[in-house]
Image 1 (cartoon, rainbow, N blue to C red):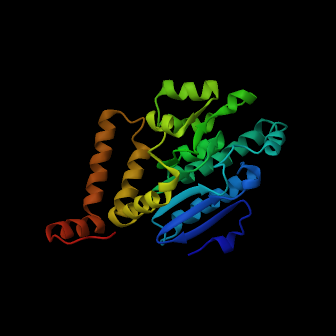
Image 2: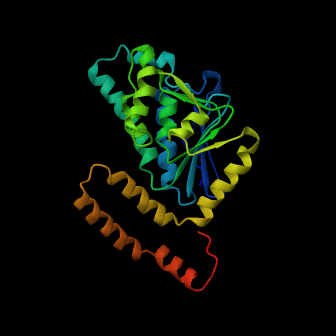
Image 3: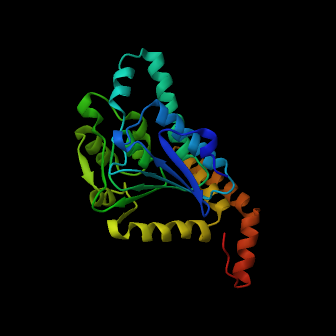
Length: 266
């Protein structure tokens, strides 16, 4: 199903092909800056992709040379005039977007082929995987340089990098290269520009064809709930999840294929 015609997007594009839903930031003339309209459209698109049975993997990427420069300046000027309650309501909308990305029961892959800064970096950070262009991508949280804080995205940044590395990024506001982002664990893969298309095709094909969607869904739930649990509660929880996994159709199908030496395509 293609939801794009229903939603009439103006800031993004959404397309489905080969069980991959691709959500593209489409405001290159504004360096794909985020405003309330784009946040709303992205939230709609991720929720739609989550519900679409024809989508197994979701890709987030951007049109133009910049992945996203963060918040739109006109938007920042508007929110600077909001009172506390209006700002809190606006923050809740941004949180809803990040939750729709990070807690989706399907894998989400960010393909960063240019600078990803501030909220734009946060979008990528909330995804399950970040594939970065070796020559063009860079990552940074420059909010401190305009008297702001990357509070919401810090929740997801701390799930990828150490506290000391996160502090260096958010206290200094400096940008780092794709290679450095890979070294600290922010990025999963760094790929040369000329190899990106072929690499991404292979990477997505493996997720689509070789990994059980049910297994990924259960594992994403575990990843979301484990942090903060004490050891005893965590072990009880994963035991229950393991028992649930053994009762799924995918488990029965997978075991049967393994025992019968049959190739399985999920």
